[in-house]
Image (cartoon, rainbow, N blue to C red):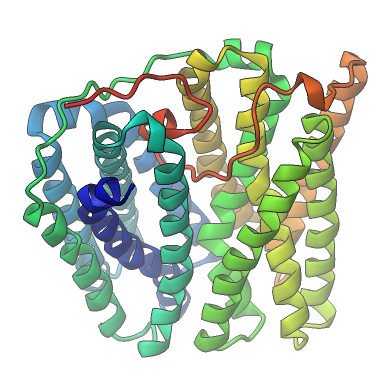
Length: 419
Protein backbone atom coordinates (compact mmCIF):
# COMPACT_ATOMS: atom_id res chain seq x y z
CA UNK A 1 0.00 0.00 0.00
CA UNK A 2 2.89 2.36 0.78
CA UNK A 3 4.27 2.07 -2.75
CA UNK A 4 0.80 2.79 -4.16
CA UNK A 5 0.45 5.91 -2.01
CA UNK A 6 3.92 7.14 -2.95
CA UNK A 7 3.11 6.72 -6.63
CA UNK A 8 -0.04 8.87 -6.40
CA UNK A 9 1.13 11.33 -3.74
CA UNK A 10 1.74 14.04 -6.36
CA UNK A 11 -1.88 13.74 -7.47
CA UNK A 12 -3.17 14.06 -3.91
CA UNK A 13 -0.93 17.04 -3.11
CA UNK A 14 -1.94 18.81 -6.31
CA UNK A 15 -5.62 18.13 -5.66
CA UNK A 16 -5.36 19.35 -2.05
CA UNK A 17 -3.77 22.65 -3.11
CA UNK A 18 -6.33 23.10 -5.85
CA UNK A 19 -9.28 22.49 -3.52
CA UNK A 20 -7.83 24.83 -0.90
CA UNK A 21 -7.75 27.66 -3.43
CA UNK A 22 -11.05 26.87 -5.12
CA UNK A 23 -13.01 26.38 -1.87
CA UNK A 24 -11.59 29.59 -0.44
CA UNK A 25 -12.69 31.37 -3.61
CA UNK A 26 -16.24 29.97 -3.38
CA UNK A 27 -16.80 31.58 0.03
CA UNK A 28 -14.81 34.68 -0.82
CA UNK A 29 -16.94 35.51 -3.86
CA UNK A 30 -20.11 35.66 -1.77
CA UNK A 31 -18.50 37.93 0.80
CA UNK A 32 -17.09 40.21 -1.90
CA UNK A 33 -20.42 40.14 -3.72
CA UNK A 34 -22.18 41.35 -0.58
CA UNK A 35 -19.60 44.12 -0.22
CA UNK A 36 -20.24 45.14 -3.85
CA UNK A 37 -24.02 45.19 -3.21
CA UNK A 38 -24.75 42.27 -5.53
CA UNK A 39 -28.22 40.87 -4.83
CA UNK A 40 -28.91 37.49 -3.29
CA UNK A 41 -30.69 36.51 -6.50
CA UNK A 42 -27.54 37.24 -8.48
CA UNK A 43 -25.34 35.29 -6.05
CA UNK A 44 -27.67 32.31 -6.43
CA UNK A 45 -27.42 32.62 -10.20
CA UNK A 46 -23.64 32.81 -9.87
CA UNK A 47 -23.59 29.43 -8.15
CA UNK A 48 -25.94 27.95 -10.76
CA UNK A 49 -23.61 29.11 -13.54
CA UNK A 50 -20.72 27.40 -11.74
CA UNK A 51 -22.56 24.08 -11.85
CA UNK A 52 -23.56 24.70 -15.45
CA UNK A 53 -19.86 24.92 -16.26
CA UNK A 54 -19.33 21.71 -14.31
CA UNK A 55 -22.06 19.98 -16.29
CA UNK A 56 -20.51 21.04 -19.60
CA UNK A 57 -17.16 19.77 -18.32
CA UNK A 58 -18.57 16.29 -17.74
CA UNK A 59 -19.57 16.17 -21.41
CA UNK A 60 -16.24 17.23 -22.94
CA UNK A 61 -13.56 16.41 -20.34
CA UNK A 62 -12.83 12.96 -21.76
CA UNK A 63 -12.28 14.40 -25.25
CA UNK A 64 -9.94 17.06 -23.87
CA UNK A 65 -7.85 14.47 -22.03
CA UNK A 66 -7.59 12.30 -25.12
CA UNK A 67 -6.53 15.30 -27.19
CA UNK A 68 -4.11 16.95 -24.73
CA UNK A 69 -2.96 14.20 -22.38
CA UNK A 70 -3.39 14.22 -18.61
CA UNK A 71 -0.56 16.57 -17.60
CA UNK A 72 -1.18 19.16 -20.31
CA UNK A 73 -4.93 19.11 -19.69
CA UNK A 74 -4.39 19.51 -15.93
CA UNK A 75 -1.93 22.36 -16.51
CA UNK A 76 -4.23 24.14 -18.96
CA UNK A 77 -7.29 24.01 -16.69
CA UNK A 78 -5.34 24.90 -13.55
CA UNK A 79 -3.89 27.94 -15.31
CA UNK A 80 -7.45 28.86 -16.30
CA UNK A 81 -8.51 28.63 -12.64
CA UNK A 82 -5.58 30.76 -11.50
CA UNK A 83 -6.43 33.36 -14.14
CA UNK A 84 -10.08 33.33 -13.01
CA UNK A 85 -9.18 33.84 -9.34
CA UNK A 86 -7.42 37.09 -10.22
CA UNK A 87 -9.94 38.18 -12.84
CA UNK A 88 -12.74 38.40 -10.27
CA UNK A 89 -11.16 41.43 -8.60
CA UNK A 90 -10.02 42.97 -11.88
CA UNK A 91 -13.52 42.82 -13.41
CA UNK A 92 -16.01 43.74 -10.70
CA UNK A 93 -19.17 43.49 -12.77
CA UNK A 94 -22.02 40.95 -12.58
CA UNK A 95 -21.78 39.93 -16.26
CA UNK A 96 -18.02 39.39 -16.06
CA UNK A 97 -18.43 37.34 -12.89
CA UNK A 98 -21.00 35.08 -14.56
CA UNK A 99 -18.63 34.34 -17.42
CA UNK A 100 -15.66 33.79 -15.10
CA UNK A 101 -17.71 31.59 -12.76
CA UNK A 102 -18.79 29.42 -15.67
CA UNK A 103 -15.14 28.98 -16.67
CA UNK A 104 -14.26 28.17 -13.04
CA UNK A 105 -16.87 25.42 -12.82
CA UNK A 106 -15.73 24.06 -16.16
CA UNK A 107 -12.05 24.10 -15.22
CA UNK A 108 -12.37 22.51 -11.79
CA UNK A 109 -14.47 19.60 -13.01
CA UNK A 110 -12.15 18.90 -15.92
CA UNK A 111 -9.35 18.76 -13.36
CA UNK A 112 -11.41 16.33 -11.25
CA UNK A 113 -11.75 14.13 -14.31
CA UNK A 114 -8.01 14.26 -15.01
CA UNK A 115 -7.06 13.35 -11.43
CA UNK A 116 -9.64 10.61 -11.09
CA UNK A 117 -8.89 8.94 -14.40
CA UNK A 118 -5.18 9.10 -13.48
CA UNK A 119 -5.92 7.49 -10.11
CA UNK A 120 -7.79 4.74 -11.94
CA UNK A 121 -4.72 4.09 -14.04
CA UNK A 122 -2.36 3.95 -11.04
CA UNK A 123 -4.46 1.98 -8.53
CA UNK A 124 -4.46 -1.79 -8.27
CA UNK A 125 -7.83 -3.45 -7.72
CA UNK A 126 -6.83 -4.68 -4.25
CA UNK A 127 -6.29 -1.11 -3.00
CA UNK A 128 -9.13 0.74 -4.70
CA UNK A 129 -11.25 0.91 -1.51
CA UNK A 130 -8.46 2.55 0.53
CA UNK A 131 -7.52 4.96 -2.26
CA UNK A 132 -11.20 5.88 -2.64
CA UNK A 133 -11.44 6.59 1.11
CA UNK A 134 -8.29 8.74 1.11
CA UNK A 135 -9.56 10.67 -1.90
CA UNK A 136 -12.86 11.38 -0.12
CA UNK A 137 -11.02 12.43 3.05
CA UNK A 138 -8.74 14.82 1.17
CA UNK A 139 -11.76 16.52 -0.39
CA UNK A 140 -13.48 17.08 2.97
CA UNK A 141 -10.35 18.25 4.79
CA UNK A 142 -9.38 20.68 2.02
CA UNK A 143 -12.85 22.25 1.92
CA UNK A 144 -12.96 22.63 5.71
CA UNK A 145 -9.38 23.91 6.00
CA UNK A 146 -9.84 26.47 3.23
CA UNK A 147 -12.34 28.41 5.33
CA UNK A 148 -9.67 29.16 7.92
CA UNK A 149 -7.73 31.08 5.27
CA UNK A 150 -10.46 33.73 5.49
CA UNK A 151 -8.86 34.81 8.76
CA UNK A 152 -5.84 36.20 6.89
CA UNK A 153 -7.61 39.26 5.48
CA UNK A 154 -11.06 40.63 4.68
CA UNK A 155 -12.93 40.10 1.42
CA UNK A 156 -12.79 43.73 0.30
CA UNK A 157 -9.07 43.59 -0.41
CA UNK A 158 -6.94 41.72 -2.92
CA UNK A 159 -4.96 39.46 -0.59
CA UNK A 160 -7.34 36.52 -0.42
CA UNK A 161 -7.96 36.51 -4.16
CA UNK A 162 -4.20 36.50 -4.76
CA UNK A 163 -3.82 33.69 -2.20
CA UNK A 164 -6.53 31.64 -3.93
CA UNK A 165 -4.77 32.18 -7.26
CA UNK A 166 -1.42 31.16 -5.75
CA UNK A 167 -2.80 27.95 -4.24
CA UNK A 168 -4.54 26.95 -7.44
CA UNK A 169 -1.47 27.70 -9.55
CA UNK A 170 0.79 25.86 -7.07
CA UNK A 171 -1.21 22.71 -7.78
CA UNK A 172 0.55 22.54 -11.14
CA UNK A 173 3.97 21.96 -9.55
CA UNK A 174 3.58 18.47 -8.00
CA UNK A 175 1.78 17.22 -11.12
CA UNK A 176 4.46 18.61 -13.44
CA UNK A 177 7.25 17.32 -11.17
CA UNK A 178 6.03 13.74 -11.07
CA UNK A 179 7.95 11.16 -13.07
CA UNK A 180 4.92 8.91 -13.34
CA UNK A 181 3.97 7.69 -16.76
CA UNK A 182 0.69 9.20 -17.87
CA UNK A 183 -1.98 6.50 -17.87
CA UNK A 184 -3.15 5.22 -21.22
CA UNK A 185 -6.68 4.54 -20.10
CA UNK A 186 -10.02 4.95 -21.78
CA UNK A 187 -11.77 7.68 -19.80
CA UNK A 188 -15.14 7.05 -21.45
CA UNK A 189 -17.48 5.48 -18.93
CA UNK A 190 -20.24 3.02 -19.89
CA UNK A 191 -23.59 4.79 -19.99
CA UNK A 192 -26.95 4.04 -18.44
CA UNK A 193 -29.88 6.35 -19.10
CA UNK A 194 -31.56 8.26 -16.30
CA UNK A 195 -34.86 6.63 -17.32
CA UNK A 196 -33.41 3.13 -16.83
CA UNK A 197 -31.94 4.17 -13.49
CA UNK A 198 -35.31 5.57 -12.42
CA UNK A 199 -37.04 2.35 -13.45
CA UNK A 200 -34.57 0.35 -11.38
CA UNK A 201 -34.44 2.62 -8.31
CA UNK A 202 -36.74 5.68 -8.36
CA UNK A 203 -35.85 6.58 -4.77
CA UNK A 204 -32.16 6.79 -5.72
CA UNK A 205 -32.99 9.37 -8.41
CA UNK A 206 -35.15 11.38 -6.00
CA UNK A 207 -32.40 11.25 -3.37
CA UNK A 208 -29.71 12.55 -5.73
CA UNK A 209 -31.97 15.29 -7.08
CA UNK A 210 -32.74 16.52 -3.55
CA UNK A 211 -29.07 16.27 -2.59
CA UNK A 212 -28.19 18.60 -5.48
CA UNK A 213 -31.10 20.96 -4.76
CA UNK A 214 -29.86 21.31 -1.16
CA UNK A 215 -26.08 21.11 -1.36
CA UNK A 216 -25.74 23.40 -4.40
CA UNK A 217 -27.21 26.36 -2.45
CA UNK A 218 -25.37 25.25 0.69
CA UNK A 219 -21.94 25.56 -0.94
CA UNK A 220 -22.79 28.78 -2.76
CA UNK A 221 -25.07 30.72 -0.42
CA UNK A 222 -24.20 29.70 3.14
CA UNK A 223 -21.67 32.57 3.43
CA UNK A 224 -24.48 34.99 2.57
CA UNK A 225 -26.82 33.37 5.13
CA UNK A 226 -24.18 33.58 7.85
CA UNK A 227 -23.24 37.17 6.95
CA UNK A 228 -26.90 38.19 7.20
CA UNK A 229 -26.90 36.80 10.74
CA UNK A 230 -24.21 39.34 11.60
CA UNK A 231 -21.34 36.89 11.95
CA UNK A 232 -17.80 38.14 11.48
CA UNK A 233 -15.54 36.54 8.88
CA UNK A 234 -13.81 34.59 11.67
CA UNK A 235 -17.16 33.22 12.82
CA UNK A 236 -18.16 32.49 9.23
CA UNK A 237 -14.99 30.42 8.72
CA UNK A 238 -15.69 28.46 11.90
CA UNK A 239 -19.34 27.95 10.96
CA UNK A 240 -18.60 26.44 7.54
CA UNK A 241 -15.64 24.34 8.73
CA UNK A 242 -17.55 22.88 11.69
CA UNK A 243 -20.61 22.27 9.52
CA UNK A 244 -18.55 20.27 7.03
CA UNK A 245 -16.47 18.31 9.56
CA UNK A 246 -19.38 17.72 11.94
CA UNK A 247 -21.57 16.77 9.02
CA UNK A 248 -18.96 14.30 7.77
CA UNK A 249 -18.84 12.67 11.22
CA UNK A 250 -22.63 12.34 11.39
CA UNK A 251 -22.89 11.14 7.80
CA UNK A 252 -21.10 7.85 8.48
CA UNK A 253 -23.37 6.45 11.25
CA UNK A 254 -26.46 7.43 9.25
CA UNK A 255 -25.03 5.63 6.24
CA UNK A 256 -24.07 2.54 8.20
CA UNK A 257 -27.57 2.49 9.63
CA UNK A 258 -28.82 2.14 6.06
CA UNK A 259 -27.01 -1.23 5.91
CA UNK A 260 -29.30 -2.57 8.64
CA UNK A 261 -32.74 -1.62 7.28
CA UNK A 262 -34.67 -0.48 4.20
CA UNK A 263 -32.46 2.19 2.65
CA UNK A 264 -35.47 4.05 1.26
CA UNK A 265 -36.78 4.56 4.78
CA UNK A 266 -33.38 5.87 5.86
CA UNK A 267 -33.48 8.39 2.99
CA UNK A 268 -37.00 9.39 4.08
CA UNK A 269 -35.72 9.76 7.65
CA UNK A 270 -32.87 11.95 6.37
CA UNK A 271 -35.34 14.12 4.45
CA UNK A 272 -37.73 14.59 7.36
CA UNK A 273 -34.97 14.95 9.94
CA UNK A 274 -33.16 17.52 7.81
CA UNK A 275 -36.43 19.40 7.28
CA UNK A 276 -36.96 19.64 11.05
CA UNK A 277 -33.36 20.77 11.58
CA UNK A 278 -33.70 23.35 8.80
CA UNK A 279 -36.92 24.62 10.40
CA UNK A 280 -35.06 25.00 13.69
CA UNK A 281 -32.29 26.88 11.84
CA UNK A 282 -34.87 29.21 10.28
CA UNK A 283 -36.44 29.93 13.68
CA UNK A 284 -33.00 30.43 15.18
CA UNK A 285 -32.03 32.83 12.39
CA UNK A 286 -35.16 34.93 12.96
CA UNK A 287 -35.30 35.00 16.74
CA UNK A 288 -32.05 33.65 18.22
CA UNK A 289 -29.31 34.79 15.82
CA UNK A 290 -26.99 35.47 18.75
CA UNK A 291 -27.02 31.75 19.70
CA UNK A 292 -24.24 30.97 17.27
CA UNK A 293 -23.12 27.70 18.80
CA UNK A 294 -26.65 26.33 18.58
CA UNK A 295 -27.10 27.35 14.94
CA UNK A 296 -23.67 25.93 14.06
CA UNK A 297 -24.52 22.62 15.76
CA UNK A 298 -27.82 22.49 13.88
CA UNK A 299 -25.98 23.14 10.63
CA UNK A 300 -23.56 20.27 11.32
CA UNK A 301 -26.44 17.85 11.94
CA UNK A 302 -28.22 19.13 8.85
CA UNK A 303 -25.09 18.61 6.72
CA UNK A 304 -24.61 15.11 8.09
CA UNK A 305 -28.13 14.08 7.15
CA UNK A 306 -28.07 15.63 3.67
CA UNK A 307 -24.51 14.56 2.82
CA UNK A 308 -25.49 10.96 3.57
CA UNK A 309 -28.34 10.99 1.02
CA UNK A 310 -26.18 10.86 -2.11
CA UNK A 311 -24.00 7.85 -1.14
CA UNK A 312 -27.05 6.02 0.28
CA UNK A 313 -28.81 6.63 -3.04
CA UNK A 314 -25.84 5.21 -4.92
CA UNK A 315 -25.65 2.10 -2.75
CA UNK A 316 -29.45 1.68 -3.03
CA UNK A 317 -29.02 1.65 -6.81
CA UNK A 318 -26.24 -0.93 -6.49
CA UNK A 319 -28.69 -3.14 -4.56
CA UNK A 320 -31.04 -2.98 -7.56
CA UNK A 321 -28.64 -3.47 -10.49
CA UNK A 322 -25.70 -5.70 -11.33
CA UNK A 323 -22.44 -4.36 -9.95
CA UNK A 324 -20.82 -4.14 -13.35
CA UNK A 325 -23.38 -1.40 -14.10
CA UNK A 326 -22.39 0.68 -11.06
CA UNK A 327 -20.29 3.12 -13.05
CA UNK A 328 -22.94 3.74 -15.70
CA UNK A 329 -25.79 3.94 -13.18
CA UNK A 330 -23.89 6.15 -10.76
CA UNK A 331 -22.86 8.44 -13.62
CA UNK A 332 -26.56 8.94 -14.37
CA UNK A 333 -27.17 9.73 -10.70
CA UNK A 334 -24.30 12.20 -10.80
CA UNK A 335 -25.98 13.97 -13.71
CA UNK A 336 -29.22 14.15 -11.71
CA UNK A 337 -27.26 15.62 -8.81
CA UNK A 338 -25.68 18.14 -11.20
CA UNK A 339 -29.11 19.14 -12.48
CA UNK A 340 -30.27 19.76 -8.92
CA UNK A 341 -27.10 21.73 -8.16
CA UNK A 342 -27.75 23.92 -11.20
CA UNK A 343 -31.41 24.61 -10.40
CA UNK A 344 -31.15 24.84 -6.61
CA UNK A 345 -29.00 27.97 -6.17
CA UNK A 346 -31.15 29.97 -8.61
CA UNK A 347 -34.33 28.98 -6.73
CA UNK A 348 -32.74 29.68 -3.36
CA UNK A 349 -31.45 33.01 -4.64
CA UNK A 350 -34.99 34.03 -5.55
CA UNK A 351 -36.19 33.23 -2.02
CA UNK A 352 -33.50 35.52 -0.61
CA UNK A 353 -35.33 38.44 -2.23
CA UNK A 354 -38.56 37.80 -0.33
CA UNK A 355 -37.96 35.87 2.90
CA UNK A 356 -35.07 37.68 4.51
CA UNK A 357 -32.47 36.35 6.93
CA UNK A 358 -34.11 32.91 7.22
CA UNK A 359 -34.47 32.48 3.44
CA UNK A 360 -31.89 29.71 2.96
CA UNK A 361 -33.13 27.31 5.69
CA UNK A 362 -36.72 28.12 4.66
CA UNK A 363 -35.85 27.04 1.12
CA UNK A 364 -34.40 23.82 2.54
CA UNK A 365 -37.61 23.15 4.47
CA UNK A 366 -39.80 23.65 1.41
CA UNK A 367 -37.71 21.36 -0.82
CA UNK A 368 -37.47 18.64 1.82
CA UNK A 369 -41.18 18.69 2.65
CA UNK A 370 -42.17 18.39 -1.02
CA UNK A 371 -39.81 15.50 -1.69
CA UNK A 372 -40.61 13.79 1.60
CA UNK A 373 -44.22 13.67 0.37
CA UNK A 374 -43.14 12.28 -3.01
CA UNK A 375 -40.93 9.67 -1.37
CA UNK A 376 -43.69 8.63 1.04
CA UNK A 377 -46.07 8.20 -1.90
CA UNK A 378 -43.44 6.09 -3.68
CA UNK A 379 -43.05 3.83 -0.63
CA UNK A 380 -46.82 3.44 -0.28
CA UNK A 381 -47.17 2.53 -3.96
CA UNK A 382 -44.41 -0.07 -3.84
CA UNK A 383 -45.72 -1.77 -0.67
CA UNK A 384 -42.47 -3.71 -0.49
CA UNK A 385 -40.18 -3.55 2.52
CA UNK A 386 -36.53 -4.13 1.67
CA UNK A 387 -34.73 -6.24 4.25
CA UNK A 388 -31.04 -5.94 5.20
CA UNK A 389 -30.27 -9.44 3.95
CA UNK A 390 -31.41 -8.31 0.50
CA UNK A 391 -28.74 -5.60 0.35
CA UNK A 392 -26.05 -6.37 -2.21
CA UNK A 393 -23.53 -3.83 -0.92
CA UNK A 394 -22.51 -1.64 2.00
CA UNK A 395 -22.56 2.09 2.56
CA UNK A 396 -19.44 3.97 1.48
CA UNK A 397 -19.03 7.73 2.01
CA UNK A 398 -18.22 9.38 -1.30
CA UNK A 399 -17.75 12.75 -2.98
CA UNK A 400 -19.64 14.07 -5.98
CA UNK A 401 -16.94 15.13 -8.43
CA UNK A 402 -16.77 13.38 -11.80
CA UNK A 403 -17.86 9.97 -13.05
CA UNK A 404 -14.23 8.88 -13.37
CA UNK A 405 -13.93 8.30 -9.62
CA UNK A 406 -16.64 5.64 -9.75
CA UNK A 407 -14.43 2.70 -10.87
CA UNK A 408 -12.55 3.19 -7.56
CA UNK A 409 -15.78 2.60 -5.61
CA UNK A 410 -15.36 -0.61 -3.55
CA UNK A 411 -18.57 -2.11 -4.96
CA UNK A 412 -17.65 -1.49 -8.58
CA UNK A 413 -16.73 -4.46 -10.71
CA UNK A 414 -15.32 -2.20 -13.39
CA UNK A 415 -11.87 -3.46 -14.31
CA UNK A 416 -9.35 -0.69 -13.75
CA UNK A 417 -6.93 -0.74 -16.69
CA UNK A 418 -3.22 -0.92 -16.00
CA UNK A 419 -0.44 0.84 -17.87
